Amino acid sequence: MTKHRSGRQVELVATEHGWAGRFWAMGSPCEVLTDGGDKHQADVLSSVVAAEAWRIEDKFSRYLEGNIVHQINTSAPEAVEVDEETAGLLDFAATLFDLSEGQFDITSGVLRAAWTFDGGNRIPSQKDIDVVLRCVGWRHVKWNRPFLTLRPGMEIDLGGIGKEYAVDRCAALARDAASVESMINFGGDLAVTGPPTTRDAWKVGIEGETPESAERLVDLRQGAMATSGDARRFLLRDGVRYGHILDPRTGWPVPDAPASVTVAADTCTQAGMLSTLAMLKGKGAEDFLAVQDLLYWCRK
Picture: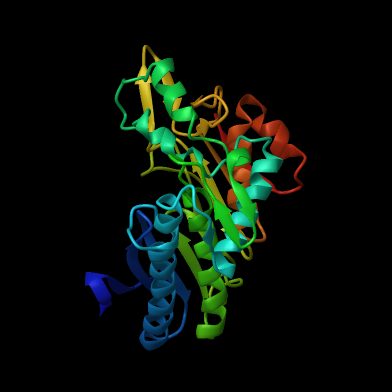
């Protein structure tokens, strides 16, 4: 077990085909699976990946004070100058806002003031939602790279793209850090550095009706996969299930959305983008995915 700063640590355990480095980051269980190689290689690789995951978490988490997101969220209405990495994520968020016609909006995190998806049955009133909606809307943000200006009361939350970005960053570092192939898996969003050498493919389970169950196993040799869904975060009221994916234009959960969407793509960022956009389409999720020319699994 390798210890890192602030009590963070990586646990290294042997597996059937190599090693697994396990740690916690971005609110998710994370692991680095190696295919073959020795313990030293696995330890180095896991430490490199964990350090990068924690760097990204420390920089972009909305829960931490002093980072760039906290600076942005507490500086309104003054402009904040951001670095190149942050600017790239903001550009991507702006693109998603346009592609989704406003359904993907990194300013919508403030809706948590109205909604708490804890499996209970409390549904906010329209009045409560309308109050929060006054602070939602990327269209109200001034983004003139590298300067970002929010209206007072507004916030940004990069959680909708941060984990997939971290997976891709860590996969790139893993390719340079070790000669063995590996899988980077952050809470079900994952990427592989290449096909394994000791077997035909990486085996990936697609989540079933509960987070603990696997609906099917997929053979993955290259690329990445990401899942969006409401298995863990929802409300249930009068027999109606309200998933946690909200339409920021209305402040309400997307109606008739699938229980989950899993997408396989070249990168985890691409897979996460498409799975999220599909969820936002509601009952049109499969029609949207069918024209993307990629593999996907949609659970109603």
